[in-house]
Amino acid sequence: MGARRNCDGLHLRSGLNPTNIVELHGNMNLETCSKCEAKYLRDFDTVGTRTHYTGRRCDKPNCCGRLKDAIIDFGEDLPQDELDKAFYHAEQADLCLVLGSNLTVTPVSDIPKRVAKRKQKLAIGNLQRTPLHKTATLNIHEFSDAIMQGIMERLNIPIPTWIVRRRVHISCQHNSRNQNKKQIILEGRDPNNPEIPFTLFESIQIIVDQKVIKEIAYQPFTFDLVDYDQQPITIRLNFFGHYNEIPFDLTYSSLISIPNDERFYLFYNPMTGQWRKTTNKDDLFV
Image (cartoon, rainbow, N blue to C red; front, side, top):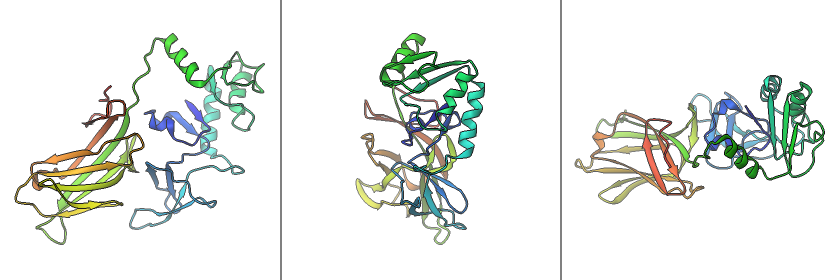
């Protein structure tokens, strides 16, 4: 179990299961509805005003509540459920590894202190001494990256290549108002929880005969289309490009060949600039 004070969401982006992470200071990529408490992940910084409102609304038709960021500002209470979870695991742990924290702010600093008081092992990796220096079993004054590289070498576990993980849902149905048209809806979903929407796309283009016939640069990504004489159709997914992602093309022989319901993963290797489409969440590549 990992307890995090940073709010950058890097651990989630690394591919770790969110059930194994406690985010004590929130997540800058997460919004929650102030009315129905629905969650929305974004591929951008959601931090709002001092009141935490972001200016966006809940997508649920029967709600439309105001969305708030999930950041815990200075002076605000930490989320009690996350804090309780962290202390629960402190009571179970036989080893606690602290990385890159000076351990001067409570109640977070009390988590490793609790492990030490139980006479279990406490290892602290930080450039400076901490208040728990004498209590720790081991103190390592080094950068976190160097510490983790050393740990992985001693465990003989290779550090895997980092892969950008995306989950996409496409539905294609007859338009309720015009049976000669089909309605295509594309949306991103949290790779770890398909119930949580994930804003992934900067824009989506529909391409026929090498020409962009429609483009949408905002949510929801809903297209009403007619079949273009059985011509091949390409749906081009354009991402925000935080990791230099190139667009990904979904190509179909015609409009009618698009499945009524398609769910899949997209994995991107930033080192090679390659995408992989798969239905297997573990089908990563290097």
